[in-house]
Image (tube, rainbow, N blue to C red; front, side, top):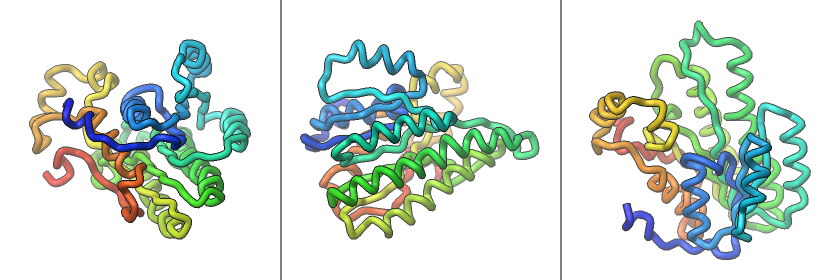
Length: 253
């Protein structure tokens, strides 16, 4: 993966807001942005963890903010801090949650919980951050969807509904914001070998999964991050309104 990680993109002087940036794919995105010279604002839901990260942080280009889309007061507090910023050049809506259950076994509470985190949260941030981007005449927004925005399987009725909603949001914002040099895209990761994936699946489960992926392996988080990095950079000057699936060919099987 060294050659992949050495792709050079310059984001010096840019500011990126990355939700869910403290772990998994979000953390990989943050690392690539930092390597590219970007300043990053990372969000997480756990207030004590955010406080610890800020206390331990020694890098001036990193800051951490608490944001929990399930708590309206947290969102309100975050938006107040957002309004104090002069600019956000890049917004990465990465935070998300899932619950696997057949449609007949879901509840209204399940729907509301996933909707608030996976749809309403990105919707609100796109709305507020794009106001700042329009004022500055520049912006890149990348919404993290999933392979389940392109295909589905039993147990994912709510999650697939959420991710298809984000694709619709992405396409609409692309045509609303294009004239301000704000490009809006989505990236749909396939099966990715994050710490969570490795700890919640047995070695046998992972082996079976990789056998049905045409590339015979799961993605490394950096491989998702590199696509996000490209879309967020000036190398992307005309690609907008797209949902790019990064899955090693899985959705074509």
